[in-house]
Image (tube, rainbow, N blue to C red):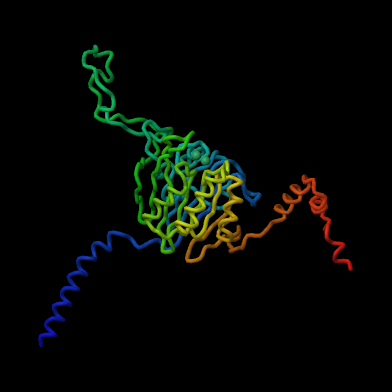
Length: 357
Ligand SMILES: [Zn+2]
Ligand SMILES: [Zn+2]
């Protein structure tokens, strides 16, 4: 009898605990099931229907939500590339502007012309192009001055508002890591690098059941620092795509990024583009092997429990050399002063005689 009583007590306690847990479980949505990334703007790619140009833009689809991440360098080119990829930019749930560099925001006026009410998230800066505000207490007051020498006749409003380069646009400014919609996070960082000192930048992190999917614009604060912040959301990182800003390919810096991404955070797949740099593409390809995904303009990645690269027809492919790649390789070999390279460029197999016996 005593045992039965205890059991009932335990059952009651478990039930009470479960009731207490329910609100906590409801507060955080289950991770997204999948994500899809379409590269709409970049300066390299295989699809001749798309126009290459310096800059970055990508469409991210996550559980039915459509996010435009950056807008490229030029609205006409973004329009053309979106049309070629059958991406309707009138149908967007939100736009994320990574930072204020022209090669990421040049297409925003075009996006607003076809989608004027879309919600835009942008980094908060003091007097930035995305607008802003400051408390009027930011400037020291001098009451001894005649009133006509004083700002706002000596009676400033509490908050001073500064306009954006896109008046009328619905821009929300972000200055700290924020979950803007279920499973859609923005990482807000500040560059401490020479040349972009104090530049604010947002990166996108989608929390999925297969790990975090990270999209970066230029990574001016360091892609390894963005991944560190994303690991707070989900320590398992499935995918990092976008501009890693290692264009000079300095060996030490690239090695540091490889160590962080591959060894520390065990990033499963990388799909670098934009300002990552040609030398860095080579180094990352070596370091990641088949987990390096070619991410030229027009690339589409389907990120589920497996990662698929989709062709224009929507089929999954393993990357292989195209006729254009061979053509480029031949041109490259033709410039060589090695006789065998020149023969290869002319389509002659320098070792052919060896097989004639
Ligand atoms: Zn850029
Ligand atoms: Zn930039």
